[in-house]
Length: 218
Image 1 (cartoon, rainbow, N blue to C red):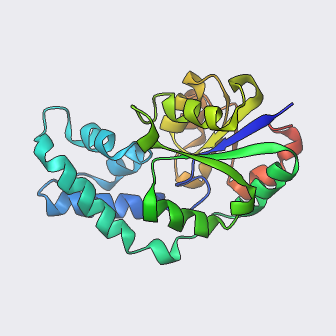
Image 2 (image 1 turned 135 degrees about the vertical axis):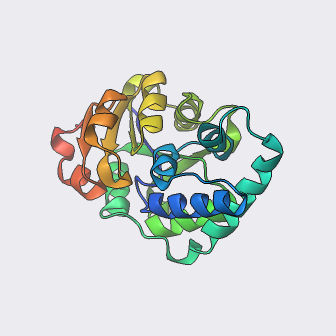
């Protein structure tokens, strides 16, 4: 009976959340907006337009959205050749694939950014498919990204586990009715992840790998 292991990427498998915080902060600064870094950090994980709306409000000048996104993309792109995988990321995906899980990435990244992330993880042999936010009408915390990942895997929600590092991940997974696992390496507190729907929380991919036998993957 096939099972699906769905993974967020930024902050879950690759140590990029604080790079996103810095580059979004700079993009906002260049456009004349003063947005605290702690607020940006808690918004990381949302799709670009949703992140901008979350931080600047629905009454903002939406004509700036494309420029803000482009500035963030250009600033973040400077790091593509040195994005660091989190401890155990590739080994975890290969272990799950070897145990018969269909591994699918669910990410808002695409194009060159996604390529850089996959190079960092260095486990393409274990990844069955990638679900991008570009493929759905609504990004996390809506359930569509996770549901699309399950469609690609051809596996129902009840035989799936979703791993992420943000409250947006946990809410999306819970709304898609999959078991949710949180990791702390994205920088959010355990309590926040549990309140958003995480059934179990681990330090990072290496900790989850070492704890698989007692995890929701067991």
